[in-house]
Image (cartoon, rainbow, N blue to C red; front, top):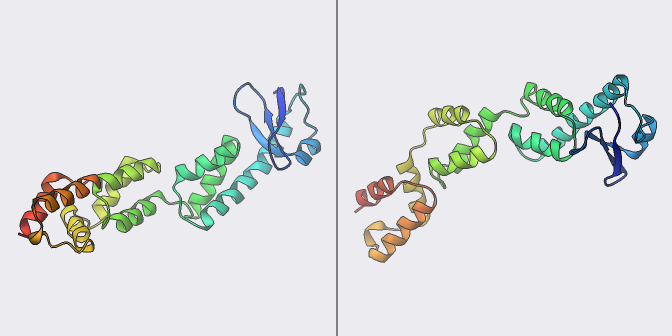
Length: 199
């Protein structure tokens, strides 16, 4: 593999291009020198494997750091590593390590997310947010099946938190409440059922 370009990145790091487009990896300036990397030179398979070995360990440490302060999905960690120009081999290595140790667990993440948001958001809105975080559809569906969350119950909790007596609301107040609940993704039928039941 020919080293097409080496360019300055930040904090004593450089990006190494093995083909046009996206950099193949990022190394510290000292490592560039240690590995003897130069533009136009040929990167041997042995050199490449040594570099990948270094970056696999670094990607693992970076993943553990990312997971230290908050739970993240597999996709979120992958995205962060790719933003740091870790090659795919290093990304896969780090993700595999974290999954084996259960530091990354999308099933558990989905269950916890549903429990923590069910008194604020509709099922549809929760599904949408989990999709955005990269949780697969089948995991989301399984997590909902395991939960005891029902849309109408969630609506009741939200209305109770707002300290609203639906029986005392005038037409304008009812419409405002309905719009608010629709904005959270609840179905009109479920909202009407809750409001009608309290009258």
